[in-house]
Image (tube, rainbow, N blue to C red; front, side, top):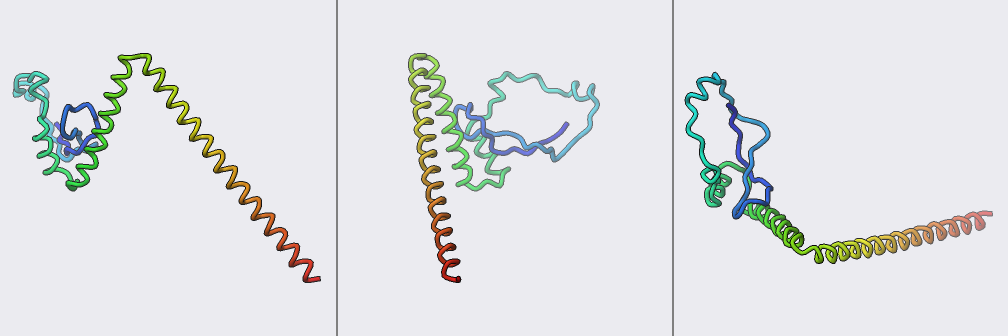
Length: 147
């Protein structure tokens, strides 16, 4: 049996409050015979009994992690944003005609962003070429004056 520390998770499917997860590395390990373990196993709980209420998750996280209150709030904002995006996607899937519009808008945004980046890169290249040309002229001028 291994014990793991609890930390803030990133799964947006919790209904409210912060999601929790376990660390990768365990901090305690006990070796027990399988038969002994199964004899002492408590009765199976229903899935609803295994859900941890939001308030209890806050308490678990405040006592077991090194996250400050501000860091916890920032993590929670990210999770809530992911949850909103997931709900938006689910809502869009119910109305296929809006999915088409959403995809076209996304393509247009990407196209505009790419076009602006190309223009910026072209301007940057022109500036570099102009600076190199200016340096070349100045070098030629210095060389002609030295003769």
